[in-house]
Length: 155
Image (tube, rainbow, N blue to C red; front, side):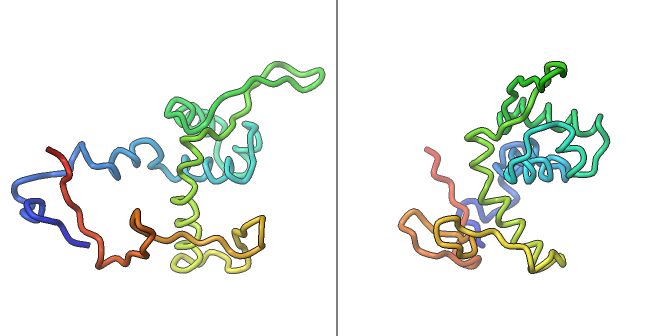
């Protein structure tokens, strides 16, 4: 990856506070938040299930679900089991769905570089083939690491 002039002179600009990666990490940057989003992608909706499947304390689960709902990645919906009290479940939103490629990329990276089980797979329901993430330009050309440059398209 390279920086396109005038961005290549790192003494004249800084992305601090205005970087899209920094902003995204501010919303979903914790391990717990990403694990909750993983569970939401797998279909989990209920508080107790999130806490159990992610392995976190109820207070931590509550704080993370609240933050993800406030950020618009999850939406709360009331429900009541027969004979039970009113509760809320958490449904993935369109904004949350937009995170899917990043989560799939982390899944694949974890399998390749962090010892994640190779027996698990993410597959396309339509044909059964493995789902992969790739970097492409808007013309649909595959783009390698060395083919990316950061440019300023502002006025």
